[in-house]
Image (cartoon, rainbow, N blue to C red):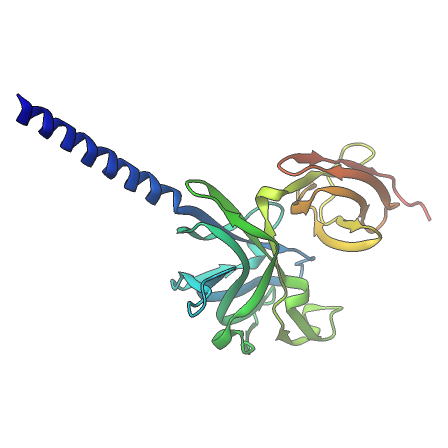
Length: 277
């Protein structure tokens, strides 16, 4: 009887130790998801803006001396047409378990880049040193991964600044090439909100290609353009007050002031009045 009691206590202690190890292990990592989107511009002349991403790394802050602060999130080559990532559409690049802690920088390695114009011409672009050393994208504020939880990081690829056209932009035939100068912004989606809405005329017809400009403290934050249904969406806006302007050719521009709250969608619709002048 005494032997059975000792055996029971021993098994109980081992079981508790095993459970404690499992719980500690579960709390030592969290999930980090990295998504890609495009801060768009009018694409009437460009059919595709392609990049091939060959590697993604993240930098963990406060690493111990002698340890590399960078960890590889992915080495899987991913081809993305950035033109398709507008108005709230994103491409998930990685979804991975990482050690808990703060991450303040992403390194994105771009192997190739190209542009396809609407007239069928293709331009293969020279990729800057980011193909070897990685393009540094700072995360402000830092994204904090908590044990057992998940965090979403959005990389906003500004196509209009990254693919710089050469030649005459008044027509497709006037474009002679592009310079590739990647401009990417990192946003912690858990600490931001989304602005979305619709732009139409005074009789509710949707306005395609209307420009939405987002200003914070009189400084342009980002822009987007409505789709064929007049809809638009802007992801990753920090909490605070913004001035929003809607404009398109043939109509009087309109401004509104809104408040963005993190974790929420703010809906703002516009009805633009025709400009009779």
